[in-house]
Amino acid sequence: MTTGISRRSNDVEPEGAILSDYQWHRHYAGAARTVLDLTNTEIWVAETRVSQARTEAVRRELSQNAANGRARAEAIETAIRDLGGLPDVVGPLLGRAAAAAKR
Image 1 (cartoon, one colour):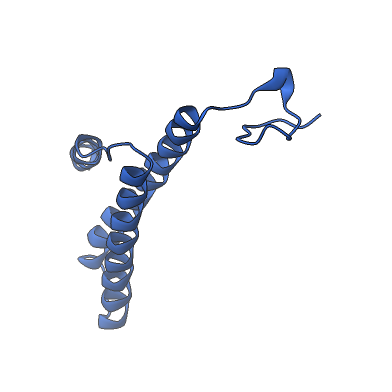
Image 2 (cartoon, one colour; image 1 turned 60 degrees about the vertical axis):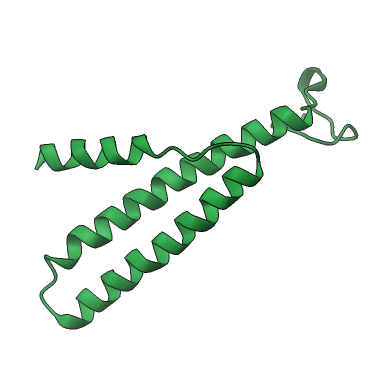
């Protein structure tokens, strides 16, 4: 028996779980938000580690990682909007504040 979410009616799913376009978009927008949260965490870690780097090569690499992460985050936000969702702008700020408070 296959499990998971199907958008196509010819897939075998438990109890005939076929998603409407709206449900499909909501599901994938939610998954994209999770990826966006992880990407924002990656950016934050890279930016934080830049100040801790001992060599210029490591600083450059971490700065490049953060820049690449920002580009990915923009692409993910665009995909979320294309799916009809709104990217979470408050969550990453609260997450960063909580992480900074734990230090």
